[in-house]
Length: 257
Image (cartoon, rainbow, N blue to C red; front, side, top):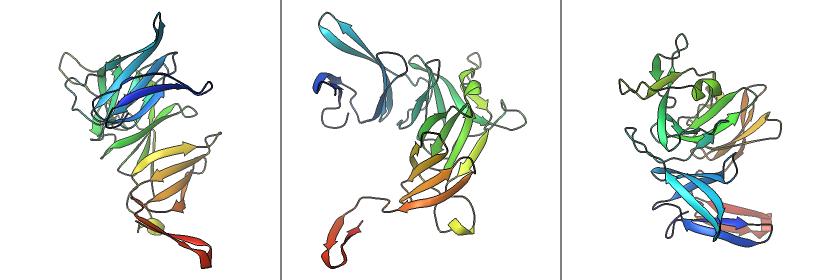
């Protein structure tokens, strides 16, 4: 889904054949996934989200894509998104808000509510871009990760029930934050690290260990969810690798970036 063609291609890997391709959008597509309902896909990217339906017609498989409409909401690149059990979609933004989509429209701009009264808006969900979103079904929460170095837990039920005040033209809706973790943790041991730019989170089968890709510090952090402990697991470059050199005498490889 990138330049120069911006094509969406569907493959049948079992039979090693291409099923169909079509124009995805006029700009870069960062992610595309199958939805929980048959034949449904969602793609996100530079300044857009698109909802796809794949159907078998007399002339073969066809894809129809509907562009998400931001309406009064500020346009944003979208990297992270998650589908709720009832089919609604929550996306991150580059300015720190969570957007709840119903159909092709932004239903609500989700904000962080105060602990005493979640409907009283306290702040943005994140101070910077939100690049990671996924479901933590054990806790019944959506987890968001951002450029500000925080993972935050938001109740699925509160998110799904959010309603805007259309009479007053207010799309913002406060929800409670159940938990947060700062990557890396605040403390003397990690003072020399900047707040992580959380770009990807991979979890093991029982959801007890999370590997968190930090593109700012060039580190993969290991987060033990049950013990709420975070430690560095692997450190490398945080940007492009510009050179490499084999070292036969030492059986090693030197890289620079």
